[in-house]
Amino acid sequence: MESVTVENYLKAIYQLSDASGGAPTGELARRLKITPGSVTLMLQRLGEAGLVKYAAHQGVRLTKKGQKVAIRVVRSHRLLELYLTNTLGLPWDEVHEEAENLEHAVSDRLVARIDEYLGHPDRDPHGDPIPDADGKMRTREGTPLAECASKTSFVLLRVPDRSPDFLRYLRDGGLIVGAKGTVMENQPSAGIVAVEVGGRAVSLSREMAASVLVRPV
Image 1 (cartoon, rainbow, N blue to C red):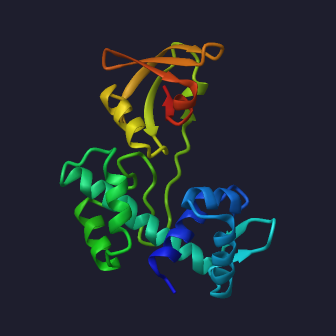
Image 2: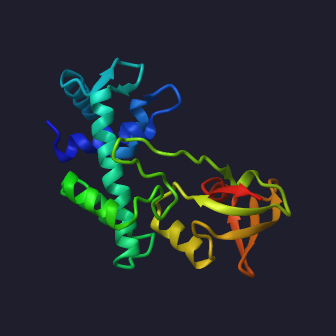
């Protein structure tokens, strides 16, 4: 039953799951750009296949079987992103869409070879953790840049937002994974967070800054 559609559902549920392990069906419909009715029908099918546990008005959870499939897809996707960036030189604002197209086509054997070639990395170009061959990953949550006070120095850890325009804006300002910077101003009332990275001044809205995870230093 592991078609492209099924894998996309399981991956989305995995990524939307909260601390309790559940994912809201409304958020799932928005993520997949599908009507709630269609989502409900598919979740019932996934439940019959033993991939999820679903109850109306209670969200959906992955079973161990479903989680295994989801993590495999996430691992393939993030390794492909890193491979496309490091080997082919694709910018980080383009690799997500390309990896979306390739993640369902690569074999586990090819993914293992890519992993070995890249030196068994634990992060993709956006700082997201890459599961290892056993499905385990090291978490590194980070602090939203919007929560950092003025004069705070930081190292950029992760950018979960995949909007190409947003990623290009960050890249042009030097705000890439591993970049070091300083919060020059954080004005909640004005809705602006101003930072300096490599001698360049970059202004972010608080909404944008909330999507950039850093480690204060």
